[in-house]
Length: 284
Image 1 (cartoon, rainbow, N blue to C red):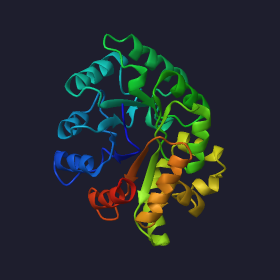
Image 2: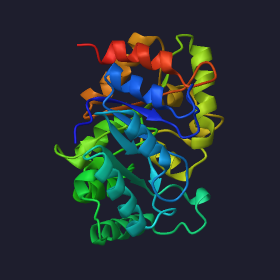
Image 3: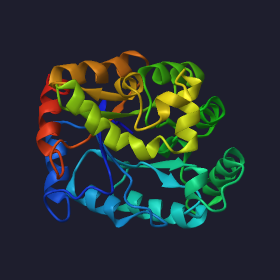
Image 4: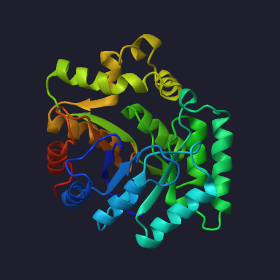
C-alpha cells in the first residue's frame, strides 16, 4: 500500500465546502497528497465517510484515524473493511486506537484489549491482514505491538523528538506515519493562540499528557493550552516555507509519511492552505 510521503488528516468534525466532500477529496488527490486520514465520526463500524472519500477519488489511500477499539467489534469491523476492499481494492487502511480513559466508560488494560482486538481481526471470517492496519501508538509497548502485529504506527500530537524515538523502537521496517498539526500564520502570538485553541482539549487527556511528560514537558507546560515551548514543539506554525521545513524534519527524523492537519485560520475547510502546502511539499 503506497501512501506517499504527505497525507491530509481530515477531522470528522470539519465540514468541507461541499456537503459530500467529494470535490474537496478529488482536489486533494489531484494536488498529490497520497492519503486522507479521517476520524469519520465516532459511530461503531466503518463510517460512510470512508466510502464517500474512496468513491470520490481514484488512487489515494483512505485511512481511519482512528477507530476506537472500545466502540467496535472485531468481526463486524472486519466485515465492513472487507466491503470497502471489495469496492476499492488496496485503498483502505484500518487505523486503530485505545482512546483515553475519560472518554471510555469501560476503559481497562488498554494494551491487553488491543492485543485481543487484533486477535479478533485475525480470526474473523474476512480477516484484516496486519499489513492493512496501523495502531495509534505513543508509548514503547504499543509501538512494539504495532511493529509486531500491524503495518506500523500512526502517532498523534507528537513533536519531532517522538518521531525519532518511535523510529528507534519500531526499527527500520514498519510504517511510521505521525500526524502533524499546522497553523499557517507567521505572527507568533496569533499562531500560538490558534494552536492553544486546538490543543486545549487534547492536553487534558491522560495518554497525550503522559507521552509529552515522557519527552520532558512538565505539568505546568501542559496547562492552559500549553506553554510556548510545548506549542512550538507540537504545532508547526509560520509561513508556508517554515511549516514545510517542520514537516520535512519529521521525515528526516524517521517518518515514512506525515499526515498534515491544518488548523483553519478562518472558519471552514482550509483548502487554500492545503493547496499552498502541496506546492511547497509535493512539487517535483
